[in-house]
Image (cartoon, rainbow, N blue to C red):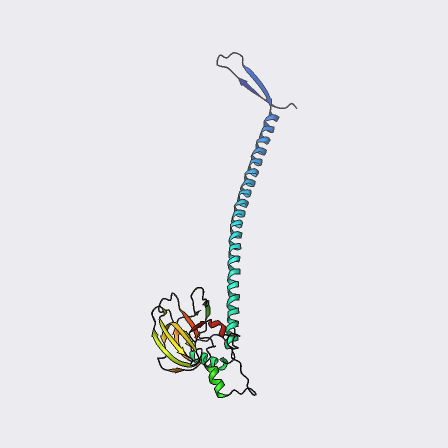
Length: 266
């Protein structure tokens, strides 16, 4: 059986030179199949391009998220490092006081009474004594009581003693209102405002040593009063030219300024 054919005529306007084309139906079928395949291939291509675009968008989001995670990880590492520093500081305070930080002044006084003879003086401060089976003569005990060698506050050293920078004392940062203790027994020479130093207490230890406590919020002693080592004499403040709550603490020996940290056994 012969295949079917289609005849296509091309007729010019002058009707001359008519052209006829005889095309088999098989060619039309092939053309249909080709168009169907073309449409299918085009659809698959568009779908793949869309998939690739979505993948690229997800990749960019992942890249940005990964950068944020790296930044957060660095922040966490810095925070952990600060926590380590706080734990080290807590350990040092525990070594000094034998307990955790307390805000109760009565507890702190009790702890200092228990530990005030546990500080080993620096080589710069020659305080050597001998006892028999732990017994100390009363004269020696009084002499040791007058050595200003206990920490005047539970805090962090924020500025050290420096003769070159004319900072003749040690600054301790601490929470406003925290207690300040007499570092040694003695008599209060003065207690009141002292210009840029703010509320200040000066103690004469009757052995050449004089200790000074400045920028107090509240003064809890008065001129002429005898104070014991570890007794609360005031609270942390920021009076005078202080920009933040802290204690400016200084020691002199026969009028010469000494580094207060040389008296403490950290």
